[in-house]
Image (cartoon, rainbow, N blue to C red; front, side, top):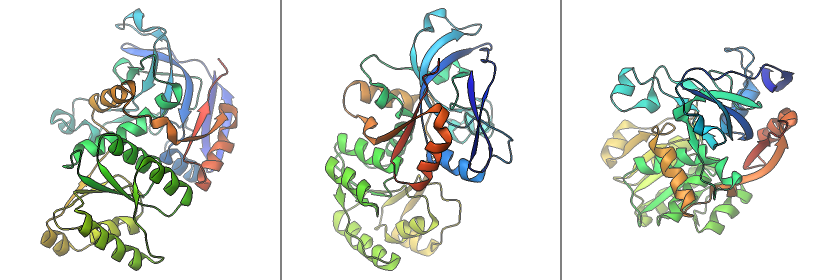
Length: 340
């Protein structure tokens, strides 16, 4: 099979490797599409120095071609989406229902070979069947949509409430889409004009910002108080945006962090206590419920997350696709895998 390997920063190697054999409890999937995630872009820029050459990619869909021992042969031929975060089920986090923070978690495309290849073998329970009426374009973004849905489910906001989304990357746009589809009022804060147009076309309300961080924070704080924001979702992923979100959040508002900023934010614990704010992390999703809920919402026609797909590349052109993703000009690039 064709397998791509990230060998050093900004370098993808193309090569042939044996098709993996599914082990006990696993299924072998012939991959057809894989989306490029922000974490893939981060790894592409950094190079995989800790793990060695690695096949990255985790937003994959495909067809089950073979099953391992203990799995029904009836699954062969199923179109499935991959859930790439695999908790161990044995650690204290897993036993207390917090598998998303599992200390031994397997992460496809990060800690082991992933989906920028022609085949992958994964545990049966993490290959979710895709109903026939769901188009591939919607199916290939189920994984990031499940992240957005999980964050919304973790919030105290309910349909009819007002929420705010800071940062309109893939997750921010998907969160905006899902919330609007379920009846929330959504305010958005973003600097990129093309992403603003997508969000406002869906029905979100743009918060007009100043040019400096100070001006922007003042505007956000005023608007948030006027609009009675229940939950503020930080999706931009920078320490400055996290700091601004916490400072601007109104009294009693919760701040949910999805952006995964690497550097430390600056905030006053006294201010948080005085305003009665809750700061809540939201890491991936809960297995298997968020994937199942997301698939059901698409199947029922309530959400159509494929709108974020903005470009396609062949697997052989993965390096070019990742280089384009680095520019930030595309919302979601999808790799088509058609060599099988």
